[in-house]
Length: 110
Picture 1: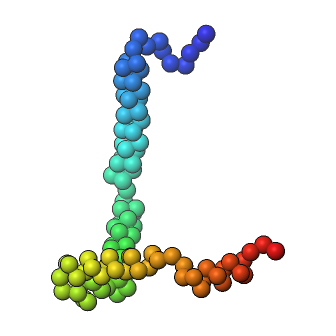
Picture 2: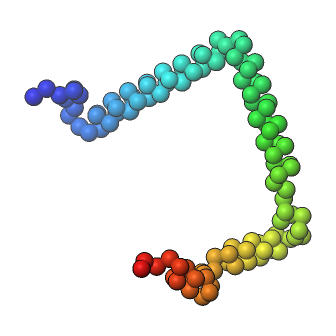
Picture 3: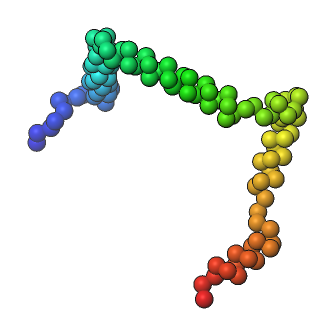
């Protein structure tokens, strides 16, 4: 019977061989990307522009659209924690009886 892998005496020999092959593959892929970025001329400038645009974009998004409401509204960490705990527990309540009755009456199979 022909096998694709050479004959190994122990599982540790097989494991070591497979790990070496996997490492070599990862190293070759990393070398490909490193060499590609090292030899860039125009691409390096374009990547720098893209990086700068992403930093500015996320910085503006963070400052304008995601203000720190907990820090603004509460003075201590304990007050912030109590507020978050209250919001999480009050929103996780099950349906009220009126809602359950409405859903049961309008969404049952005839």
